[in-house]
Image (cartoon, rainbow, N blue to C red; front, side, top):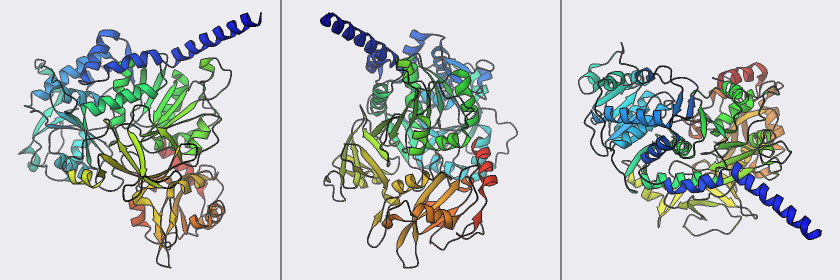
Length: 607
């Protein structure tokens, strides 16, 4: 009888494991690995052949030029997507595109950034998506740096560009998605650049063109960096690197065709393009939120029973600011983020909600938070961490090397490996890596040693094997006797119940050396605080050597955020060079009534 009982128990466990693997889509994801190879455009062709008119991507609003294809289209199947790519590629090719010409896409955040990029690749161009939050002058300088010959813009971006100055020598054509209209075109542009309406190009019924077949080493994209240390750099991504990153995405994302994702991402970013390819490869549905409207996102999660939410860390700050007990997050299985590591307070709050465990037969509430630390240069998250409702160790931990990602090592300034527990430079090496910076190869050479590239991050490896993200090297605060790493300090401050967001950076103190200071935004509904009182409370939670020399309280709206939502610490160092600096007419000891201020911040963040 015991043997029979054991056999039955083993059979039940086996059946449950098969059920779990099905819920995680493991077999489908592993089978799809063989399709993650150049040319990536073949993924759309395969998806169109297999999935036809099944909706894969849903938009929260139609594209501003989609009437040229089909009025008010918000549901996109693989067939529709492939047809749009074919027509767009023919339109781009009609402008005499040559091999490896750069095709920039500078327009509002929308799904068509992916369509234009794939279309440019299909006819041999290098797609260069640009974040619409870049100001016109920066975007114009970037277009000149990468030598873009064609730029695809909407009306708002067109106006920003022409108001910023004269075009670069390489730029010869602008495709305007919603018509040139009555935009005032200066002579400096009208004489050297051809202006084309996308509607007119599509209505011309240009014959389809044969797709260019890319090999592993052919450049597909130039993605730009976040610009946290200056003007964005153009990161060259080849077909082989993109394919390797896609294979990594297939390995570690625990999703299946039963999932419904929500993307709240900058769609010019490399990770967005990777995940769009993954959607079509796996037939996973996704809603694309173009405006980062967290109230809309929270309503959509409830109404559409979203199971996977993917956003950058800044969106999670907005989400938590707007989150109330009335919001229903019970459908969520997985929260995901990448680029910067997310914060403990975000992870702890969100993993309490959701259906990850109930979906696999375990009667417990909760979800997973999958946190990836990476950059455009890395190609995929270099380090990956999975947080559960029972995770108790945080302190800026960023996990372990990502499956299918790059090799990892931590070295000192001479390039020698450091012992475990010692801070050092994070170095990576692998096929998913970028191939250099466009027109700035010296920057790659300066940060590379024997094929290993320095990410700019300072990390250490904890006793259990996880890595801890300490800082960006440029942001480390170097005092006369001690080095302060700002990221762990920020985590301590963010755990204060009144704090919504914080940025820690170095300032000059009267003694003449550098010391840490912080700019803080407070939560809606928080009691009135003065900076001196908050500074005293926070410093009691910090080691003596890491205590803040100064603290300023300001609305979150004045934080200098880059195009991807990262706080630009270099701007803060300029704004607050010393511990006696003031801002907005207030000294550091002025009382700040934050209830109205924080409520206004939440309203602004919801847009």
